Amino acid sequence: QDMEQFYELWLKSQKNEKSEDVASQSNKENGKQIHMPTDYAEVTVDFHCWMCGKNCNSEKQWQGHISSEKHKEKVFHTEDDQYCWQHRFPTGYFSICDRYMNGTCPEGNSCKFAHGNAELHEWEERRDALKMKLNKARKDHLIGPNDNDFGKYSFLFKDLN
Image (tube, rainbow, N blue to C red; front, side, top):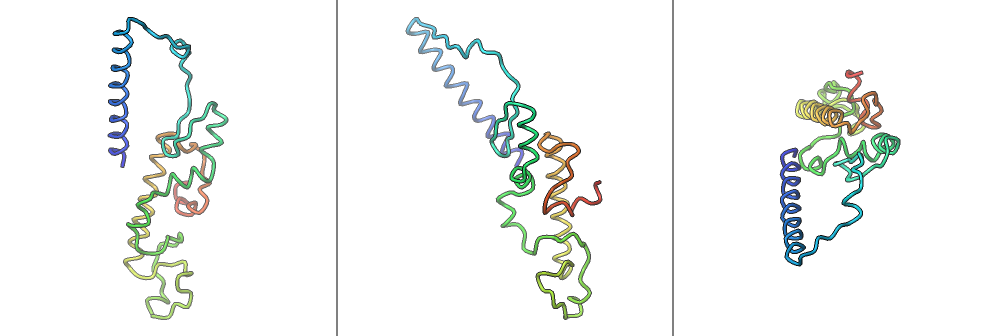
């Protein structure tokens, strides 16, 4: 996924360079150089969230964005998630239900324990994948360093606190 994003950015930069070359060449052919006020504007340091595509103009606005529920959901959720997982979403109790193993779990999908080895294994994989997403988001400064409120994902990170 990172490589895809890197490749897309590279493609965009190649297109921008080509279009700038064509524009500057046509201006030179006309014997005119067009100056825009933005050519002399100071470059400001903006905050850009590549996950959400949002630009923020200030630190305060940026902190508001990265602490929003909508942003945090994007940190942990990708479109592929619905296709690669087959079992229930983990509940935070990473052990197998004894009642299920005995064939008598009355809670069904509401049970907080895994129903079988396959589900437990998938829950552990999901937890690891979510931890990697969290670490990448922190590394990219897309989540505050002291932010430990992850909504429905909070239980997955109890051991990180």
